[in-house]
Amino acid sequence: MLKVLIPVDGSANSLRAVEYLIAQTPLFKEPLDVHLLNVQHAFPGTVRGVRAEAEKFHHDEGIKALAAARQLLDAAGVNYTYHINVGDAAESICQFIKAQNLDQVIMGRRGMGAVASMLMGSVTDKVLHLVDVPIVLVK
Amino acid sequence: MIEYLSNPLFWVGLGQIIVVNIILSGDNAVVIALAARSLPPNQQKQAIIWGSVAAIVMRVILTIVAVEMLKLPYLKLVGALLLFWIAVQLLVPEEDADDGVKSSGNLWAAIRTILIADLVMSLDNVIGVAAAAKGDNILLMLGLAISIPLIIFGSTLILKLMDRYPLIITGGAALLGWVAGEMLITDPALVDWIAAHMPWIHIHLPLVGDLSWAQILGAALVILAGKVMHARAARTQAVDLAAGDEQNK
Image (tube, rainbow over all chains, first blue to last red; front, side, top):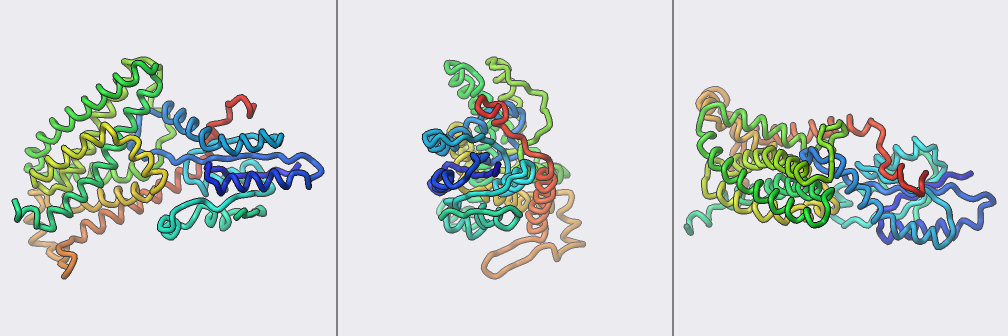
């Protein structure tokens, strides 16, 4: 079974990647093993003493960010599992791909402002740079 | 008054104090909001109101204490080191280690969490603001005034900023390192020794004004230490917060 990852931040770009996957599924003989991953920003280290609440908060925010993508997949009848990590988006995505032995990544370009992407490079650029598996970039 | 307002140093100081406050009052507001989340809805408002009142009272008291304390020798030195540590903490993602505080959904447990956080974070904030104010009491009081609305309304602001502009945390941490460097070399116990032995530490630039190597080094060290700690944290395996959800079982 082909293991496919779609990183989802809830943006229109990430939803286009989901739509692309749905459009592609009839082309595969076997059903795909689809994983959705949302990565939440960690709080600064000065936010202490509320770890359990912080995890619940990240979980709830992750569920919100994943909602639209899950709706699309549910409506199309595509099975999937979803995951929520906390940390740097690109690093978490790369770590996830290695840990889960994924075969392919389908991702949109992240909707960051021009200034921010100039200063930091986009998450997509960083993932493209770090990952060994094939990546489908949906524009 | 006009002279005061036309002094560019005043505006630089004020700008620094606002940035320090957004970060070091914003995180306090986040802790209050998070601790209150585990409570039943009718108690959430109470916990937030009392948590905010306690944070404000602690800041007022600590600010008054700080004004007097920082005139004593060696205390600026201690303050600068503490501030440097706070700045590095800002750049390290939230800790994984169990901090011993359990969420129980109980009002008193939540209030205790909030009060401890208020005390620690008010201390952080007052040291940060005092360092940026450089002994100017008007700036110190303005810093205090600015922190109050930020504690009350700051949690959503800092969450949005972190999401859209994560660089603000890095920038804020670097700024804390910068003001810590300056605080360090203006300690009454060090000031004469530095003037005698390390006069080159002060730099005068034509347009920018007076700087010092201590500030530059402070900011650079914070960024470097943050990078090292961040890399160490990134090596640990990430936790999947959705692993226990119904659909994924």
